[in-house]
Length: 119
Image (cartoon, rainbow, N blue to C red; front, side, top):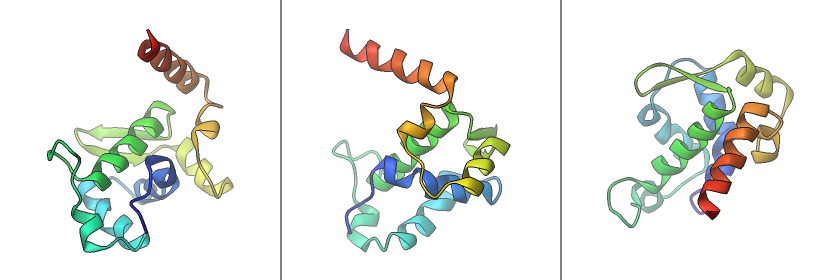
């Protein structure tokens, strides 16, 4: 299997952060196991050579979910699901950008960010 996109990782990442306060490094290997990633996929680096691809995608999933209010950061580099995030887990088997766009603050952030990129 290929390394999942950040979109495919969102629900899994949210589930891990719903278990309690975690760091990305704490959840990367369990996520790699869940997706049956090979040793090569687990260690694949971005073109810059500065970060693993899997970690980068987990960070993007975390970033968008934090903007949507599904995650919070009680300390630097530590994340945990909010009540809103836990509610998503309780009532949904999928999570994507369309679902995040239901949140007005996220929609404002996302549309503003997209317009900045096209200018």
